[in-house]
Length: 454
Image (cartoon, rainbow, N blue to C red):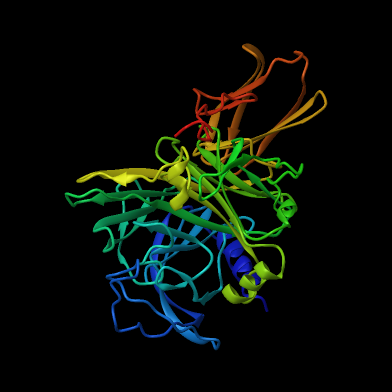
């Protein structure tokens, strides 16, 4: 029987028996594992991963292997962490449906992708230092678990990064009574030298299920700083739908043009979504990665998992793009990590139920607005207990106010008609906890170097 089916049944049963508390547990679990070889014993100072060594052998035959698993759980979600595999979040489940809002790989299948070789798909990985997957991505990192005074629980993972002599730590925290978990990152350059500044959290999500990318913005950047239109390309394809990317090779697009702090995936076949929020000033970078939908990309599904299907990645970064060498000749430059600088920033990851899409989101909830002619449908999925007003404006004129009392993930919706002509719609939850503007102001900045620039 499929492992994911059994996992879903177990989680739904545990939800029914929940005692409405938050918990943290360390355990040792057996996973089907495709291991990698011993390291090359000879360091190579000419390679860009020195002083690290590299692994060059990967198994075709699986073995059963025990792995340390840290599990965070509250009434609404369950989060799994692997301290021995880079400290990555291995997956996350919304308990009432049993659905993954972060891709959970039921096998540990190492393949030659990362800087030092081995890499596993799924979950959320933490990348620091220089461009690419971190040198710690498949190795054990430091970790500690903690019960906090406010009732939340935390698992803190971290490591020293020897390429740049920096230190990173990520606190993965799950609170009581809320349908999100947060990642608070502390990234420190404790040297007297300018270091490369690269920081991205790479989250994996299922590719199946009529997937829509909900990314605000109007420009997609490449690694070389090349700027193209988003979401509709010059061929007229709406690339915000996964199925419309079935051409060419793998896609690696960084979306800019908006200062809104969220991005999301929405699976319309399941009426289910997954969202991310961070203050725009903390994490302005937003990337979508997907393998080619031809056989050249599908082979990676076979290489990286046994039965869990293809995935895409939605990534958050400290820079607008993951700058390749040629990006320095565009407005999107390489960043330096100043001597003695410490950065601390928090991000939120959460499921979204029955909204039909995502137009705006943050740690209070997710909102979706759809128009069909003059008819407007508004859906709101709260992420915490909500006892507030939802005010709907056309322009600056209040059209309707609704009193809503909702539990987390209890979706509310209403329908109305656009009776105020062309005035844009505005929706505000409570004291500006969540704000939606139909025509938000974009990010005004150059995306190309002027042709006459020397």
